[in-house]
Image (cartoon, rainbow, N blue to C red; front, side, top):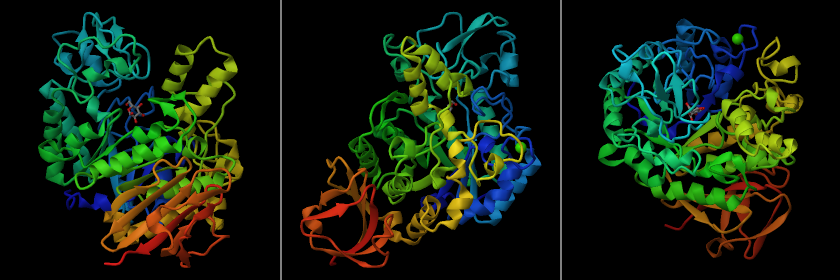
Length: 560
Ligand code: GLC
Ligand code: CA
């Protein structure tokens, strides 16, 4: 089935589903496609127009779905191909597109290709993976050295991620043909595109030279990030997607704007959007595990950089959460000011230029889980970090590092109501529920018109109706202000101004000169008790007082 072009993505709002923790429909404590089927109306009710599924394929779950053992099937925990088709058709009927996760940097070591490849150098799958007699000094991103010895083959294989995720040899044309077959399989079924996992890592430098030894992990990245043949390979995949008008979004860890633009524009254009990571490090260095206090200035700088540099050339993705990061209120907001900071965070990104993504549970303000011992954590990277770094530190401190960084925080079961098991399942869920589900859950927030949930709905509604917020230009004001994020979206003589405080106290905010004394209309505020949307706003000539995490969207008109 051919879709009618891919231009829909600029006006789309995505919802991301990490299925294992979304909704259990067949009473075994594990989220599945039966549960998703029943929740599609809910997703649609947010104003969402597209869904991204994290991997649904058979997987031994060493990295929860990112270690795939069969690309053209559904994990039995989640249903089967028929059930997937039902979900797909229903999503389409409700007016939502569906994109799949494409993980082709590596497979599972339990994939048939790897099982064959291990058998020896004369096997037809021998060159599907990257085998060497001697490892180089690269680190993997998830689990120690990037090389693992395989007894059967008598050689080492490369794995940039976990040991059970051997890297495919993309230089082998047969492997690229396999990728194209996978694309066709899902596109023929009717999916609308792909989110392409660590896609900027698939081409490795010839000879696999050593990296800078003393820099853990990142010391070898220059040898596989945006590698030598990346754009040739991407072009081949693009051609298949072009046949179907399918959307392609790349995940680009550590990528710079300059490199991203090569995928997103010009002759080497092969992707429609890219997930960048710069704005994910406002409270850490490279990774959440190397924590530092949140600084709004870092967040603003990263967001503005991508807004300005992509303007007129490419299209941004907008996100604050996904399955790889702890919950945003616990990071950039405040659990104490749960609703106010959750809504201020929504303001700070939902009105930027680009396509918004909402990760399951973000719309109700789910927060980090703090498990009492490392034994309770299941994410391979958390476990690796815990046992590899800072091992001599106080155990409390070590656990704290996990609390602020673990990917498990975004993978706790979705909180649907305050009943037993939070309405996620009627039997004991596969993973720990965040105990705050009694308070933070969909059912309670549905009833409260000022909840985070209903706030997301309002933001999305306003955004969707507005040319200014969809296509208007972006401009940041007061960029050195440590507590306030102020930006404007403008289209011809119409504009919206966003003012968001990230302070926990009431603070005075001195307006930029050009706004002083001007008039506008309040479009939305997270202090509805203070002001009513639709009412006129007069920008003060000196300063305005902002309540803790106060955020507002103001419509203004310029004289033509
Ligand atoms: C991506 C995924 C992440 C996974 C990694 C390896 O970053 O989002 O969850 O661990 O790739 O596939
Ligand atoms: Ca289930």
